[in-house]
Length: 239
Image 1 (cartoon, rainbow, N blue to C red):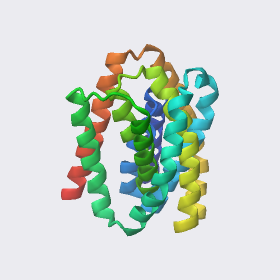
Image 2 (cartoon, helix red, strand yellow; image 1 turned 90 degrees about the horizontal axis):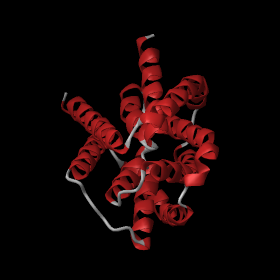
Image 3 (cartoon, helix red, strand yellow; image 1 turned 45 degrees about the horizontal axis):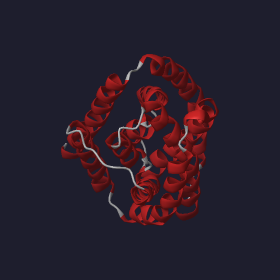
């Protein structure tokens, strides 16, 4: 029962963050699901639910999508997908968790230091490629997108809409690649279906929060989310 409650809490909080920030679900859900489930189960459940969330939200926010950047990210991500699968198949689970922790803490540091970068078409492709690699390997396309969009000072509504639109593509491709190369299970799909009501409630709460979340509060929430998750994973690794 405790495991089920922890599972439900993870997905609820992650859904709220995804709706209010545009990136929080995979960053929040994947590390903690790895505490409960096997890597294949945690990543595929995350991908399935993230795909569901993107489908649920995209129609309402389609007007703020930057389709030029979206096209470049999508093309770039295709190159990263096969490398992500190879990484997932070959990596040790403990090193897997450590890598996620370091990635999140490094990302937080760069954001706090006010990392800035000028957007270019080439960089759009590179960020897309990194996101594709991270989606198929650890189920987390968000870190490169978050760093890039924050570094270019992208307005939060455009960030949320463009990343969600990109997720529709990359999560679908990544799920297909995961199933083809590592298989799937009935447990994964049953768990995902049972989680949908929790996710829907989280989406509703997240929409309310998004209405009063200003740009400064958005940044603070981002720092807290990333640093907390990274530190938690580091503590778990060394214990």
